[in-house]
Length: 135
Image 1 (cartoon, one colour):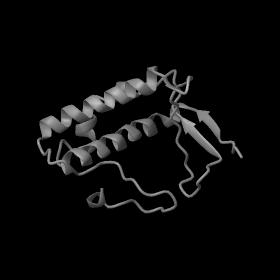
Image 2: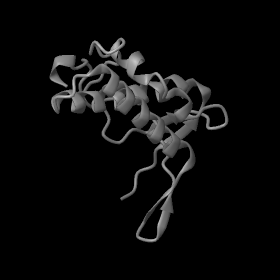
Image 3: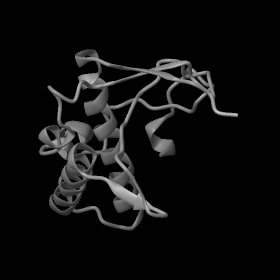
Image 4: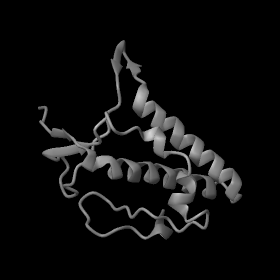
């Protein structure tokens, strides 16, 4: 049975949207480093390009599944302990574009390439952040 989640559009979620880009950048950086790519210049170029591309996709594109078109709408729930949150928020699309925040994401997220990740993340259902060494 479908469950209803109320989604609120608000400028209050712009910083949350930017933090989500940082999390995507973190995951790409972890993948690059685990593949043996340590060069900061290469990692910066790959991550900033990836974040811009995905941000642009979130802002402007749709995709097709079985003949039905879908537009991605990212929303964020404050209830980290709930499998099915009852409310979520998203940046107001009139004043926010993900791709506008993508350039420089590598340096912002990694402290200019030293790997000290700037966005704490954790598992749903747990309140403590993960140790960056575990990424």
